Length: 115
Image 1 (cartoon, rainbow, N blue to C red):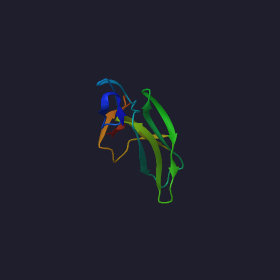
Image 2: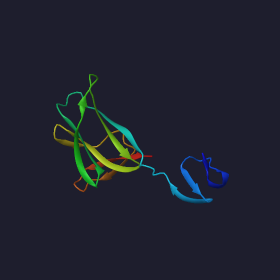
Image 3: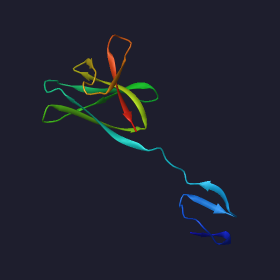
Image 4: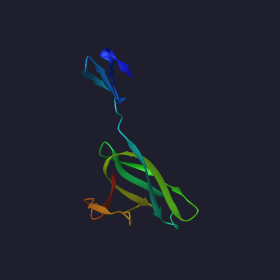
């Protein structure tokens, strides 16, 4: 892109006028789809319960697959998130989570890291 005084810009996200940087394109926060899975073939309902927005727990229904797994995908920004599963009304930590924290009630919340 050619600009004033024949200065060439090689980075398309910069705007140069009189050899001064006057602006930058806005960069939107990146989100990634994160899929949560739990093997619970005898369960009748499974919910994903997590602190995904505003530090408040939210419930999301999970879909039962034919192989006995339940699945739910959530778009998440970079960071650490607490979650657990609600299997037929019983809070259940993710047995495959790499980290967990106390939930303050004698149980645990699992931690997922999105990077």
